[in-house]
Length: 229
Image 1: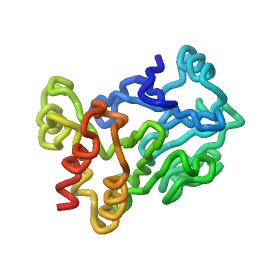
Image 2 (image 1 turned 135 degrees about the vertical axis):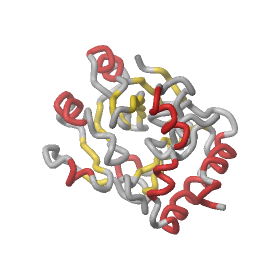
Image 3 (image 1 turned 180 degrees about the horizontal axis):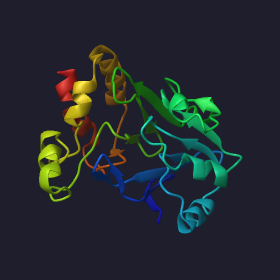
Image 4 (image 1 turned 45 degrees about the horizontal axis):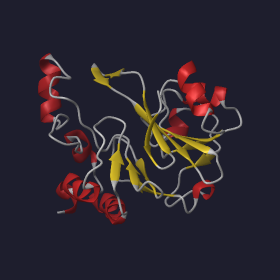
């Protein structure tokens, strides 16, 4: 269920969900901090087997929704781990008023993981403002929806045409066209992307796409060349 991705970081695949008729595979990450506390990034459905695997790594203390689109399973995780702190990205507090958030994700690292992870908020987008993380120990950048990739045969019928036009089935993960169009303040986005490109990335993981483990820094420059020029 849990697969080790790097030093003190694990990933797990979750259910495939339907969004406006399109199927999305899901992926979460577990990061163990120096204290031994666990951070759950973009949690997927909490099955018994996943919970047992997570519990074997340490206590769950931080539950992260990286953007306002990834919130489907927050309630079940907070119910299971009542002592964990729940962190809100921009826009999610108003969207999920049924949840009690303990803290907002900020520009730069939150105090609980200062010095171990960095983060920046990619703003200026009408769809969502995504908090992108950098796990220093494994040199991993964590994206949620800004980078995506699906197999060529993942979609059928008219959805296959839409997926191709939206750049969802490119040879490597890329920013979907709908997100590119939704950047109405590209100046703000460029500042965040510049910070991301300065991180010494050796790998990139995302919720919906292949893992990047070779030439990650060069890959990120290619992925955002349409924005940075």
